[in-house]
Length: 209
Image 1 (cartoon, one colour):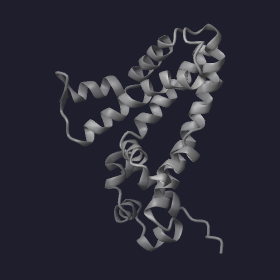
Image 2 (tube, one colour; image 1 turned 90 degrees about the vertical axis):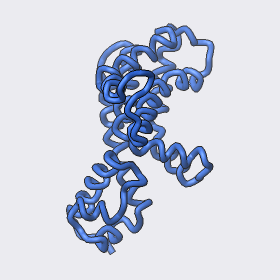
Image 3 (cartoon, helix red, strand yellow; image 1 turned 45 degrees about the vertical axis):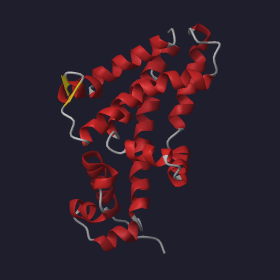
Image 4 (cartoon, helix red, strand yellow; image 1 turned 135 degrees about the vertical axis):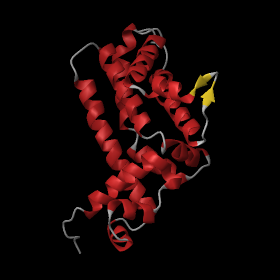
């Protein structure tokens, strides 16, 4: 039976996004999502069935929005280098938006949870393919042109993702200082648009562009 049109599922997903960014996966509960959305738990189960399916729906929506920004950045007229850099900037911004969530997902994958791997590989990899295509366009003029495309992508994408994810882990564990610098200062350096753009420039220079 088709579900009647309603804004209830949209309210729940908006609440889920807010809670994910504030508390991560472990801090998001069905009861809290319903409280923030202003709906009862019966409606939650009617629309999503379980917390796991709810998380998948919220993350898919966040990734779809990221891909719109990603494709818009890549579509901007410019040289292959400029398009590649724009793509990396969007990857860095997406990593920033999911920094409270991604460490738990990576942990599940690292511990061999096949459902987590299947979800990520089935829903979160389109941008990797696009970066690979852009890297191939740049290869004739890059310093690592003799290497495979996966090698080049591996040299580019982690620069945009891991500093933000590590920063998110430090935040969640209450770390206040690192390397003699306050975490607040490092947060501004790593999470700001300027910091992300600078890392994208470092990444493309790293492959000789």
